[in-house]
Length: 323
Image (cartoon, rainbow, N blue to C red; front, side, top):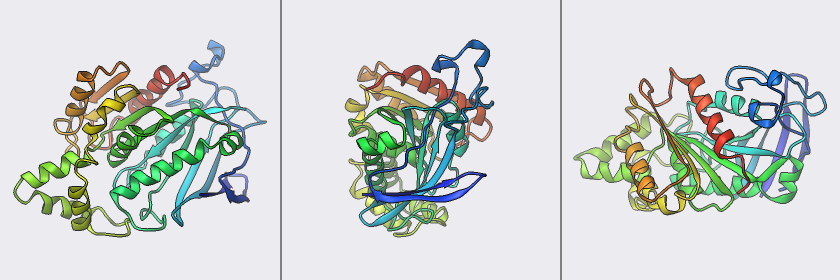
């Protein structure tokens, strides 16, 4: 595994390094209501900049890539200001990722968390071919890389406080991978898809698989690799493995945030959100938070500030302790 980073800010662009796993030391952090600052210095990270600016360790952006099986995964790291080490969110986009939720990345960073955002193989210029299996494998690689001791130390990352936050297919990826990754104790799924359940329902419906393939093709502009029919076939072959309900026994012990929109016609709450909530509650999930936006569509187009506050509140209240 290699990682390459280039600093990207308004003042300069300069190459840093390219080497195995290691990284670049840049300090991070943010003063927010939960980080012990004076009440006079508190601010709303969803809508306001930090009151205190750390000139010695300012917030910064790096662009670069991780490597997985010889392919580059295009990556942006939003590093929070302050000395750290800081908790870190791995932010996972959907299919194909037109809504990248980078407004959430900025808000989460203002709240004192780093954010790692990357594109899966075969999407948005990352190398290789896209597949649902590759999505899961790429999440594993990125998480395992950022918690490696030398990399975590170089980037002021607290390896014991890593959260997955995923939207749509990214919610599916967060749930499937997070159930198996011991490094992960906090998982948020925003309008998350149950790919296994979706394809099972499509098979049962007359012509459903063909409609699903056509939908995938219609959205696949920035995707390289198999077309919709091949992706549906992959999902059918791995339907049980891609069923988010199968990970409930492992997920029930973690801090979970499940957010849905009542007006979502891509991942309707009745087939994606509610069955997972019911299964987690039946399993005795003690740290489960749920939120339904009554006017929310699949991208929460009218609730972006409220969505930011929901995610930040969950991170600050339920993900404050090291795993």
